[in-house]
Amino acid sequence: MPGMPPMPLPTFRRRTMLPTACGLLLAGSIAASPDARAQDAAEDTEGQADEDRFLVVPYPITEPAIGSGVFAGPVWMRAGPAAGSGPSKPQAYGIGALWTSGGSRGVAAFDHRAWAGGRWRTTAVAGKADIRLQYAGLSPRDDQDLGFDLAMLGFSVQAQRSLGQGPDSLGVRVFAARSEVGFDLGLPPELAGEARKADIAGLGLSWTRDTRDDVFTPSRGQSLTLGLTVHAPALGASFAQQSLKLDWAGYRAGPGKATLGMRTIAEASAGDAPFYLRPYVALRGVAKMRYAGERAASAELELRHPAGKRWDVLGFAGAGRACSTRDGNRGCKSVTAGGVGVRFKAMKLFGLTFGVDVARGPDGTAGYIQIGNAWAR
Image (cartoon, rainbow, N blue to C red; front, side, top):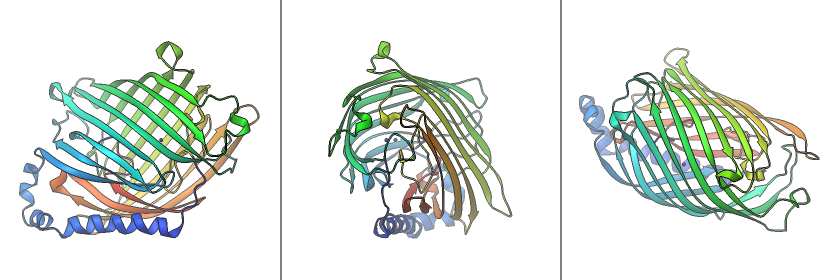
């Protein structure tokens, strides 16, 4: 499904091996199933596989910021209309519940579908969650380790309109949520003036150009999104913030039969948003929101090579930098991370890929179970 929130969390080997073993078991069990073997014997029928499917999906959660767990529930999927340019994207809707070893819990419902022959796409999400996190500090150079709970209840609705038959589209998103923060040992001194509760509401505008040849396992093309997000009291927010974000991923032929991919994310914000809404370094091997500030950028390279008819092996490496400009909490921090992974492509499930990545970052080693591309949107 195309595109579902700090934290110096130590990632011990036991935490790494569990998602790694689960990911390999998931991919291996699919590969060894009679259905998968039948596909290899009759590949000419694969084009008929993308019919309506109703599945009970256990989506693994392996994010170091919140621990290992699962988001599980019934999901309906069907093939999307053929795109005039760019990849065809499946439609889906469903509900699910979240549980993680770090103490996070939640429920959510989502709906992603195409209208008017694919010229319009809408995505709606609503949910309630209590997320258990660690606070590192306002500056990315800080190294505090304070536990806190983030409770959120809200929704988001996005509409995207294709521009003619080309790869470009424009999007608009409206969202609203209510959040509350509770620290185990009380608010840190630098957050003394920050409200525990916040109303998060605003408007997002975006332009996207997508020329990838596949949404789950691209080998050619690129995806570029430029977005502006505005939180304002006039829109129902309890604070004012504006942010600009660039998200680009490109793919080309690599050495031999390999595919070389690169992703770059850059974001800058201004205003007085809560600390948990600031831009952050986004890399495999780095816990989300661990290195955050008013400006953040990340770049990651990936080399993927086929290892059989449906298997791929890959290696990746990246670097990121976050800078805080808040008075009294200024500073910048650069980090690097990298790792290896494996993928299995299940053609009967809309071409989805299943696999696992193991990454080493500045705070330890982490394992990730991947369903679809690690950069999928």
